[in-house]
Image (cartoon, rainbow over all chains, first blue to last red; front, side, top):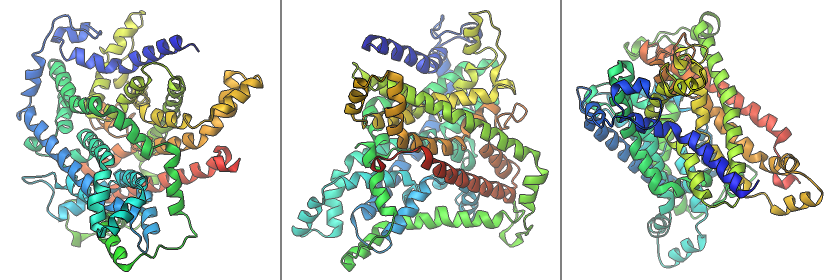
Length: 276
Length: 319
């Protein structure tokens, strides 16, 4: 196929694939009667009012939900980065009895469907009195401080194996302890893997619905996905515009991350070859 | 950072026979010290809950009653599931249908676009990223909302059909089509496997194509005899991941149906049924049994996939 034809085909496909995104962006700016009459992308009457309407549509302002989602996502990022880095260092660099077995178990948990554990995990957290209350997000956050997201451990192990061992040896000769090697050699050199982990952690937590639906039940504590869902439940015709506006806003952080780090995200998928 | 380098060390570490590393004792101690958070997580967040759900699946536990009142019911939950719960079978049917249709379509789209992008064209890096974008957004509630709206009676899709004089139904509200829209949403997110395919395609030696051209092979023949066999480990890898992934669809089914699995249970994915049983009906014992059947089914499926893989997956070192 000639390069030109190929490019045309690619662009046509991209047009179809990305159409829903353009469509929701355009529709979020349409007036109410236009929602039904105008199936195209561009609004005839520019109606930015959907945004403030959506923002204050529920009893609690959407700003609150954005803060909640951001807090949860950032803490998950912190937890994943810290705990997975420690585990990965042990798997990639340290020699100890049972390492191969533990590593195999870690890889096994990669394929474990998370939904299977939701019932007993809920019960455990409830027994620990961590469900509900002033800060109902601990069940969403704590597991990530315990390196339970095996995907990131695996990603970091793969990355660290690419760091030359000579650097460890040199640091040891210079008098570094094991922790010193971790702190002065592996940690700074693992930055790309850490950034990839941080971005994916943020996006996945930001988008996650299942767990947040289970653990967050008090309106002021709602996260963005759980709040968005209320629009669907009470979907009268008058609420479509505000619903689209808030949907667009909720996609925005992920989109910005995509813009800033697209290359890294795609490479990250390649390195580990998992999920997405 | 190529894909083929990734599985190799995994292979080595997971397979015996191998001599256990015996470093200096201090390093062994450090190893477990660094591993502590992960070990605690493995025990507290994975292993213990797994055992707990196994135990609970033999009880009629609901979240409201106390631990001391655990009421043993033997295999009653499992019996009920297989013999007295048509909804369970329905959920199984919906989930299998979803996975069996969505996974091959998604992989075919991923492979097709990867082949299209596997050429030195201007801007190919950007195109690759843009095709990947739906994989980042597609799992969100917001995108499910977009989907519902696009495929409703007055949605954009019917607006498009109207251009050709076709009056489409309300796709998401029609039991015949609702699952189809979910499948389409899943296929739409073909970018992640596509990126993995692209990395795999980069590993195919160019000389093979040149040699085939000399022998007079056409494009299709090259695809069948060179590209697909060499790519088969990557296809296999994507197939396993996407199949397992496909069985776990929850968000879109929940949003499309308002959490009910409707219309007429046509979008009642297994995980959604599990959620309804556990967190709407509070039948946690029954939900635990559902979870274990799910786990065993997915495990079995993985084993089956791996055993069929022997017949069509070619690893480079066999040749």
